Length: 177
Image 1 (cartoon, rainbow, N blue to C red):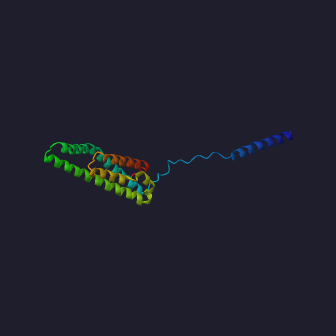
Image 2: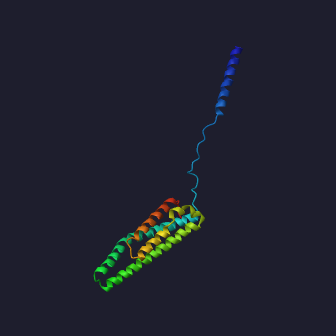
Image 3: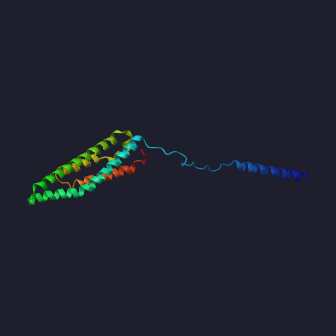
């Protein structure tokens, strides 16, 4: 009987120690949830630049949409004035339209130059420079075409500017100012 007790006591102690050893094994660590962490805001320079890019994109879109028909009408009037006799009022209106379109393209170019220089100068914006680089040159090409009287072809570089601005917005983080 004594041997049975000793055996039972030994088995019971082995069972207790086996449970204790099982409790010491490593359990898998759960990943911490990112839902509780506050989102980090991009620097103020980046948020301001995003707003400026968005504004310039809206300006370019509106201008390109309106430029097509106006440019076509200007070039048609120029072609007609060479082959037909057109009254002076129509010629004056056409000259005023040319001047207005050229002034608008110059204003767009100035905005593009300022925007691109911001991306060159500010350290937080330099990583987005490859997306926006060249928009001032493209706006200059559009201005050169308009000065040469090729208003329809001035639309091409402006569409490329529009695409570059869209790409820049896609690359920049979305955050409210």
